[in-house]
Amino acid sequence: MDEYKLGRLRFLLAILSGFLLTMAFPKIGQSWLAWVALVPLLVAIKDLTPKQGFYIGFSTGLAHYLTLVYWLVYTMNTYGHLPIYLCVVILLLLSVYLALYVAVFSMSLVRLCPHPYWCLLMGPLIWVSLEYIRSFLLSGFPWELIGYTQFGQLPIIQIADIFGVYGVSFCILLSNGVIFLIYLFVTRTRWQGYLVRPRLVAGSTVALALIFSLVWFYGKLRIQFIQDLISASPSKQVAIVQGNIDQDKKWDPAFQKASIEKYIKLSLSAKKNSPDLIVWPETATPFYFLKQVELSKMVQKGIHGIGTDFLFGSPSFQQKKNRIEYYNSAFLVNPEGKVYGKYDKAHLVPFGEYVPLKKWLPFAGKMVESVGDFHPGKKGQTLQWGKVKIGIQICYEIIFPNLSRAMAKNRAALLFNITNDAWYGTSSAPYQHFSMAIFRAVENRRSLIRSANTGISGFIDPLGNIVVATPLFQDAVIARDVPIVHETTFYSRYGDVFVIICLVFTSIVVFYRLIRN
Image (cartoon, rainbow, N blue to C red):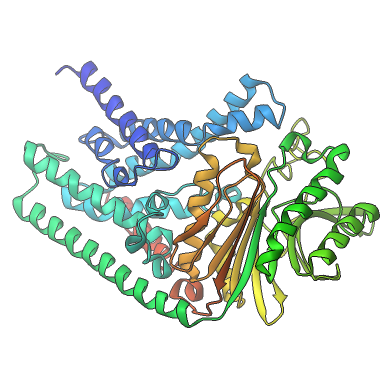
């Protein structure tokens, strides 16, 4: 095969890997594909220079992220009122940035792995190290790390209470590496001039089978243990209200009273279950609660008539010296309408809730234009609800493991996620967002209650099992007894020790290779 055709084949294989990765995530949700999705990419970068590996990996990343976060175009066009061509440009820029991580992975694999067995070791280490860096670099965007594809595989994801989602990612990369070695052996193909020996294939296959068996066995043991723990734990009755308020009307002053009335009416239907707490979504009250008197009294009167505690989202502000600071907040309110406590969102959405580098980007604006730039609250803050502490995360805060962990470490016995996913329409984004929340329950062994304006709302138990979930764009009221578990996991206590070890080991190998050359 001539060089031109071979080069074209490499790019086709790279793009295939990108598409297979996307298909492993919701909505398509073929999670098994993640275990083999990167094999075409590994075949494509075989015998390339690091520079060539970078470009091939970049092709995989670009194909993956363009098809994974395509919904940004709809969101920015519909609610950000940006012209479609500019939305496409922004999607392309974000996808290019995210694709760089896959490009660096491919380049590093070529550069650091002179022998086939090095691929087996370094592939998982490099990948999870880059996932970890992506979780905090430039404010962080750990959207749909590869481990999240397994959110529905309960025995596999139980290791998250030790290793976090990164442990699942590691196993997936190990699987891709072993299958790639088997491919090299069967086809008698070389990696960097070296053939794969039968001993390496046999050893790596046995190692993968052993690791997978241990993961599965641990998962089964933990499932039984946590089920027994749930049965012995006290519980609270919680009701979720999904108001299904149209995003176009949500901030319109003409519809504010109608929105409040709808939420109160739906909440009254939950009264028959005698809930201890009723949860409304993010900015369910699209005005300044307690500051705008008439609308606040409507809410307080409705709460008093229902006679239970409420948790709901509302914007808030504080006057500080010569400026006003705005917050995206959640209020915990008693039946008399008095506030137990308030949580202010700590990790804000760039260009959604504030404009980063505003001094240098004067032309850029936010998608939430009804208030000024939000200010971040305190990370790890919990609220006291009776004898129980609760942790609240607003919107996409739930995709950051460190935020849930900080709350669990601060003795939060229940986790709440209130959000407004109406921005995403019926795209795959609400399903992707919901899938990541499942890991926060497993990592910290906490019940997680999620209330979304238009869905998906639901209850997730400490095993990561979806107890019940609502459909999109329907009025809904659901209630369940949620177990209050005080188990402190290794992950809650020590955090991302595993992935930091991976990052340190990868850095040592990089340094060693640089010195050697």
